[in-house]
Length: 222
Image (cartoon, rainbow, N blue to C red; front, side, top):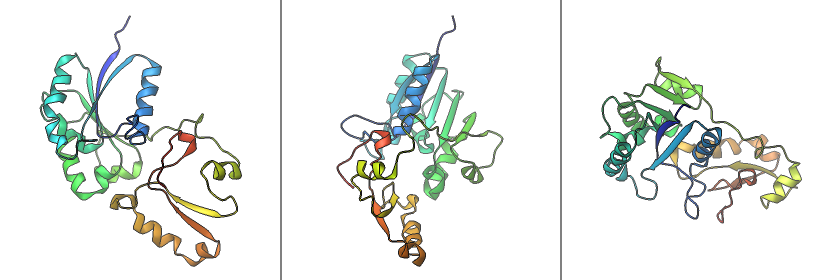
């Protein structure tokens, strides 16, 4: 009987009950799906989240201890700059990285990402457009999967009422943090100022947290 693949995930986003339960929910869902499939044994090394930016470097000793404690076959970086927490791992450590967007779209993050993920055997991009930042034969495009048990069509009235919205109105939902430049809120606000959009009586709904009932995530701030 083959032993399960031992994988160490280094990530700066992972859902934590009672605190950051929405953050990195897609990373958490990937972990759950892999564990349910079997044949893979995952350990999560969470860096920076809840500790601040300095932890990208301060996490190096505990990441190295985690690596040394078990015979891992692979390290998987989730988000490019988390590679800063893997600087103490042996130079020939088998490593891959998934790049999500801001780690390449933000110029400061892009420079760090290119340095710390250069040794990765594969770089996984969640969209083909992102590969334009770093063309390479090592690139693989794997979009984030969709759970069709949770993400399923609903009658519009039902969907609006589940989110506390008036079904008689039209809405444009901005499902991220408006204060983060990489999310493009400035572009979003320019688009909704187009007269045709205004004539259609579109009401702007700004959701600082993604209050999406199909993901089972609730937040008190909207």
